[in-house]
Length: 269
Image 1 (cartoon, helix red, strand yellow):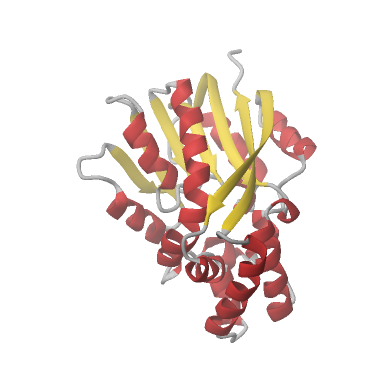
Image 2 (cartoon, one colour):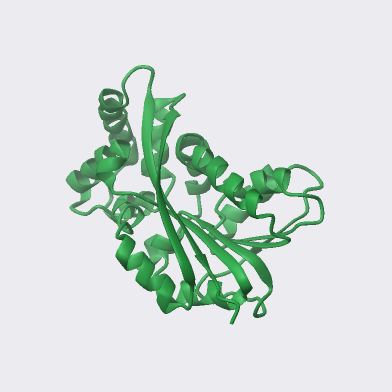
């Protein structure tokens, strides 16, 4: 996937992401992630690759008043939608930033969080080092990825269709391609982290609108850019994906999700 596809979350993509994908995929996962963060009770929290703020909103509602929450994303359009969805008066500092070159001082945060972002970073090792740099000694880096497509059947179905149409998996290769625990552990340890932990988490998420979910999978991420570059109209593909998903999701429509949750600690010395 080109660098442009990694970065392009503008146009209609944030809206399809928020309405089509988030209720099924990111909302349920965010509830798990936010609960884990709340249990650690950070006072200075940085979220990278925050997207439209699925986790951010839950953290703002669940963490004690006075918790300093900074949420960043590379795409200003995603942050703009996140800002619209935050309740009035919410004390969250939203700012565009590259997780591979963070504009923050060393030891500025107690916890760094990244939900479903690390696998998209061109320089994953650099992003790990940056997370370690801005953490205080004893601080924690929590991040999640998706497990393999076979463990997320909706993604397998969508990826197969995209391959048929374009000859490549596009975003579905990156999003579901960071699954080797040994490789992730090596990245964390090379960045200076210790106390590495990993857990697979299975979720079953209702799909209230299969057609909108199909639209989100094809138009709510850089797959939309890939289709546009190939001159492929998305509407017929969305209809075909909806048809295939109905056979996969069952009745009532339910998406089987499997995510990998990682935690690493910055040593105190």
